[in-house]
Image (cartoon, rainbow, N blue to C red; front, side, top):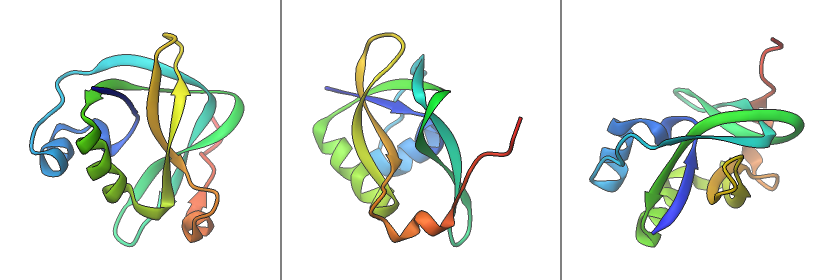
Length: 115
């Protein structure tokens, strides 16, 4: 099984059921350092997307998925996202979907609102 760090729609049980044919359970809370959440404006919705950003952190959930499930998620996330290996605060190595710097969707990404 593979570890997957989620922070947006992939944390949602209904989305998991639709994409994977099952829900992934509660997930373990974890944190990713050195990234922030930005907004990707799609045709019908606004999605969260990770961007590298020193000093920032992103709270999320850690799940276990199979290699075949990761391939399905890759197809779902499309060109706007890329799957990268990250090290979480818990010291766990996991996959996460972040901004794809080569994607044409980058023009639709906005930084987060100032806090």
